[in-house]
Image 1 (cartoon, chains in turn yellow, brown):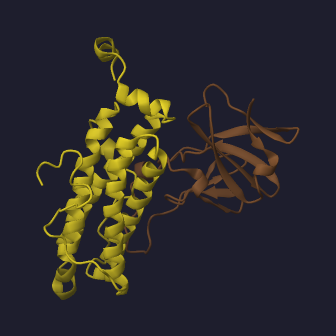
Image 2 (image 1 turned 90 degrees about the vertical axis):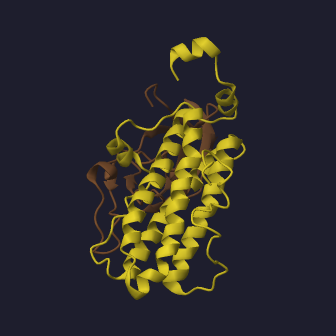
Image 3 (image 1 turned 135 degrees about the horizontal axis):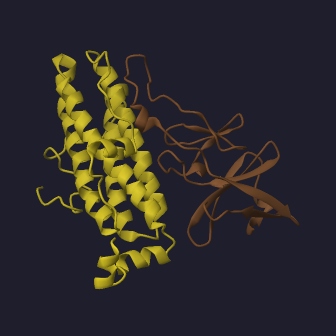
Length: 197
Length: 120
């Protein structure tokens, strides 16, 4: 937030109230930047992983990977406006953004012909995302209601994604069926910039 | 010096989160009978250190399993993300991390006090 901005409109009440509740806004900006970075780059790497889901085994999971891929992009879209509301921003250089992402890059493994290996990479990415948004939820609960509301919606979908990949890897019984449409994001669709849904 | 808690509040092999000065989160733990205190944010990506576990003389962050020495705060083990040999290692810039910020601990009359310097 620039000094000029403050001189024109004064302190932002939306920030004032969360600071009074004990939120360190600079810390929250870093947590959100890490979280949206993880979503953005997961979307990118899932595109590559999905392209390699071929053959009799791969075609069966391709559409599930696609559901997770588009919903991760939606998570980025849902939380980025909140990052800017609290005075944060996205790095100008995408290379910087990649280095600040909260989760490792979900690189295509060398033995990608083995679909199980791809599933394990997907599973690890979802697990990291759950921890990352769990951190935001824990930090903002009862202190920053708006950020919490978005983060917990994202986390619900990340937990669902983890379950999908666990079920594919283990044949654990499941209540999961396909989304109604790709990128449905049933929990986050009301947040952020998701007008395209 | 800032009072944080009583000595009896910190059990052996525990890691406890406290909020001081309204919003600063710190961890106070006890390992091998010795109290230590550090910032509760992992220097790698800001995860809460009190959710971690002990491994030898290190505290292990639950987010990416990075290990920090509880005496010095030094990063002692930067865990690889690779779950198998066929996985590709992460970019060094992504893996890089500073050390854990440590605070001096003093016990007076069974109360735990911390020394937090201005640049901490």
